[in-house]
Amino acid sequence: MTPLFPALTDAPAHRPALRFGDRSLTYGELAAVTGVLAGQLRDAGRVAVWATPALETAVAVVAALRAGVPAVPLNPKSGEGELGHILSDSAPTLVLAAPGDELPSPVRDVPRLDVTLDRTGGPVADAGAEDTAPALVVYTSGTTGPPKGAVIPRRAIASTLDALADAWEWTGDDVLVHGLPLFHVHGLVLGVLGPLRRGGSVRHLGRFSPEGVARELNDGATLLFGVPTMYHRIAQALPADPQLAKALGRARLLVSGSAALPVHDHERIAAATGRHVIERYGMTETLMNTSVRADGEARPGTVGVPLPGVELRLVEEDGTPIASYDGETVGEIQVRGPNLFTGYLDRPDATAAAFTADGWFRTGDMAVRDADGYVRIVGRKATDLIKSGGYKIGAGEIENALLEHPGVREAAVTGEPDADLGERIVAWIVPADPQSPPGTEELAHHVARRLAPHKRPRVVRHLDALPRNDMGKIMKRALPRD
Image (spheres, rainbow, N blue to C red):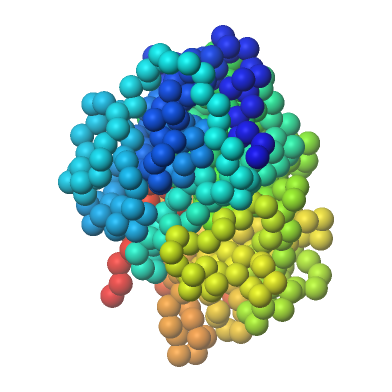
């Protein structure tokens, strides 16, 4: 029953804890505000949180955790159908929201408690919740059906954040800047709860911009968290903005996650700033599994090595573990450790299907692993593993190769049935110049020269933009079909 946030009592009361725009709370103020709200939540069951990028969202989640009450973050951009499903499935007794927030109709049906940042009242002790008790119920994207609620225990949050502290040398002296949404584990668990567990500070941009990043890094921020879309915008802005390059050069760590960062963006940022972006790998059900370490080699295109306490293996299609790692053999990632969720809410069937008999979680992510332990993700098993001409091919490496072509601005790769090959490789391209897009032969030669002939695209389709979700991930199931 170790507290998740010892800094609420141990850190100096005047130390900055949270800042959203021009609104902020010190550790003393955060302890008081969340203590009052936690007292109001003690007898609640699960509580939903209207997770806007605002101070109230962070306060609501910390208060729920202090009260020992599971929080269900709601994406404010979700449609009414999805919100209705999540609320029906999770059955919260309250929804927590900032006083001025307008809530859509499914959410208005739940009793509301405004988060007022009230600091009046005596100190409230944290509830004595067990480490295995639920902390969050975070809903998955639901690509194969309605979203499922992943029940994340308190021990998973603590173990992930402590493992990242080890990997990143993360301390209370660090000041984190980011503009990530707070309904997802990246922005909420890593981006808010992470600094608070260390006793450090969070500066949330509200809305991401390279200018906002530069301002905060110039004003003492030491860490930047982002997704590939954000780093791509930074890479594009760097040639015309030497002050942005200088600001990024001051950061102790630049961390990217939620999707693979293309190698050419790695290279552009490193060349301009002298800093390497490091990547980590996780998912809702597992929190964080691997990371490039602060004291390790920054190897673009990889997500580093397993974090302390995390077991990771690659398996063949029949579930047989791959015996030795050569950096070429593709397998599905399976993981075990204290970072795992306890199951899908009220879905024992889905939970059982997600685990092997001996407790390994089937991630559905395909990867290769080098002999020294570095992991490189090549795609999702369901959408990114292409079986062509007897080879197992990961879409991710082809996408990286395509992005190195000067005529390609965005790229996605899928497979489609082929009578001869089994599947043929299809490249979906957003051209840099729509009036002069690169053709199939040109791109096939480009990929074959960089990777191997059997990995070249056989079909190229041009789009104005690729469909992406809120975290910047390409939604391949939304690509147009003939």
